[in-house]
Image 1 (cartoon, rainbow, N blue to C red):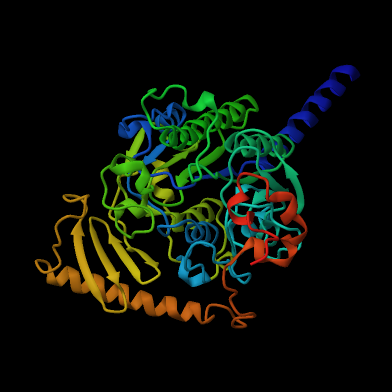
Image 2: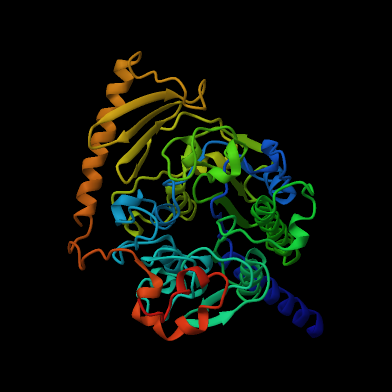
Length: 478
């Protein structure tokens, strides 16, 4: 009898401990995955003429495919800032590529770390004010991922390819292999060691950003007549797609897939080298506020909550990522620097009927801007001169017919909203969003090889193919 009572007690204790562990880890694990320069049309489910992307197609079949998802800006650094802050890039002074993120900004990684998440960043960073091909981020860089809430990071300043040099929290190391698999391998190793608490992992690829280089196994299926440059370019997407498959397979093997939210998107529209098929027939390319520069592929997978195989035409953007996750976790608004430009799209996860988006999605890149209000889009190619056009994206996804003059009421409404928003952004630029005002002057972007901290490495690195162009004249007399 005593033995039976002891067994019952032990069993009850085990169940109690297991329940408490589950209860403590009931929040979803979160993985944000972002490709680099992948166009909206470069997905197998959009019938690209050369790319099949079977793993991304499978992910879409098991998740929510967002057909009208937008990067926060038409180039990389600004979009990355919008992901971390939930705010338009101009508010944090990330005006264009290579501009640094203000240290006063509150980020999603900081919020989730406070909420008990293990946080990690792997891959491209490009928010520390450095331009040029990616190099390891120095430990003394006060804008490294660790200073924005990432407890673990293996990162590089910008795009990176085969056998890259990367920084593990300031320690420089060469990693052997293809860039996409390297960072997924490192992310999975981190996840494997941090399963007892919810984790927040950011995987930012360097593909398919130029200069393009691919392993033979990633371009072997392309026609022999295809130009080698194009094979390398498309091969980077093939390799990235394979690493997505690896990520999802190993999450399943570890028993984590069901309660892990994986959010995939690109950082801006496709490049012109990818042709019109690369942007799915949309107008223009990376660097433009037309659809080809802003609209990007997006899939959200979370088996425990999101019914697979759904396709949404609800307009959303990278500015919505932080607000959505904050809503899921019931985080308070003081985790954000205000004002926030994004909105939660949590309602889409629950298979509820789609409604119109209540607040428009605003964009400002240099002297260009746009405003998306459901089917309508306002575009300004010259903000200073207040030059506007307007399009109906439902009937004209190529933005070919300007309907501004034919719709004066709607046009005036959108212009007024956009110009008021611009005034708000200007206040943010001046530092009015921070209680103490700006604590430091915004530094200008600079080439990393001109930064004194990299001087000891220049001679050693000048023979590396990714840096040879920038360092070839190093030490030569004028």
